Image 1 (cartoon, rainbow, N blue to C red):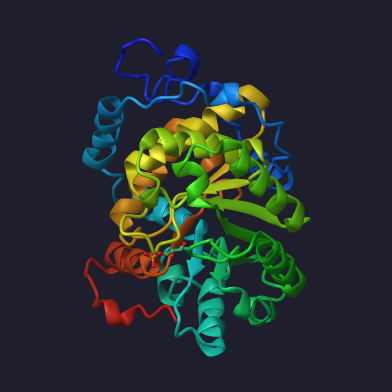
Image 2 (image 1 turned 135 degrees about the horizontal axis):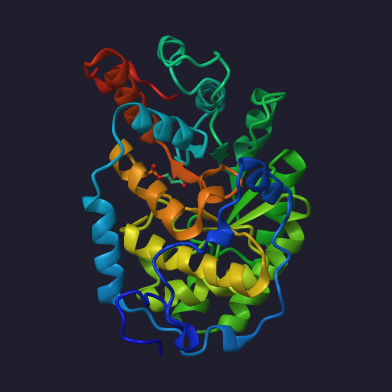
Length: 352
Ligand SMILES: O=C[C@H](O)COP(=O)(O)O
């Protein structure tokens, strides 16, 4: 176990981890981060020693995340810039039983021009300067989304593997991944089998994610841990590491359908494991909080977390995404307030 200092949040093998990203993680420009997008995490052979004895210092986690929530957020022009950056990292999402192709196409139009034209102009940006990081839908709508986003350079992300429960037969999970890739999905958000985590069957978790990795082919793999269902922060840490060992390009907190979805505590543990994995392998793995991230204030806290824990590259969509269905509306309201000094009603910011 690591030293008792408050800085050791996740303590594998006695390695305390300081609360700020090593300078080596900060690249001078975003190009390195974009390059990272092209560099897939190819994974490493399963090694139980990487997770044995992994424990989480809860008090240290809570102390660290309390500083984020209490932080005087960035103000005025700087806040507007951070919020615009956040927009480029949103996986604009609709994952509802009553979704229709029409709703998905409207969401894609919003993804292309996510901020109202008058606000973009008032902020001194070109009309098409800002687009979201991706559009995230069920398999049924992947082809329509790919058609609607043709030429936009915005990837389609498909939730898969029996989302949100993830309890379909393994063979059907692999078939679903392949079908979404065939329909045009460039990113696959898989959900892991929670039982493997709850029973500590880490080899089974590794093997299933390894299979998903292979089924994705050239598509990027995001591994959803469903952290609200896996009981402990130690399980969050171990599952994060196992999914990265298996080749996940991103690790993602939640489906958005659990009772508790993305939280700063869980996110801190996951990004610390991303850092540990980077220090061990050199591979950059992305992070995606999802579910309940619905306010501009909350997304600023996540951005500070990414910058301080992992460095500047992790503010780019190649390494940071936010799975959200209503966040964009609040960001647009904040931007309108920045431009006009007035808050508008939510109904003036329809998403789809
Ligand atoms: O990843 C996608 C989540 O389901 C979105 O959750 P949300 O509707 O709470 O923003």
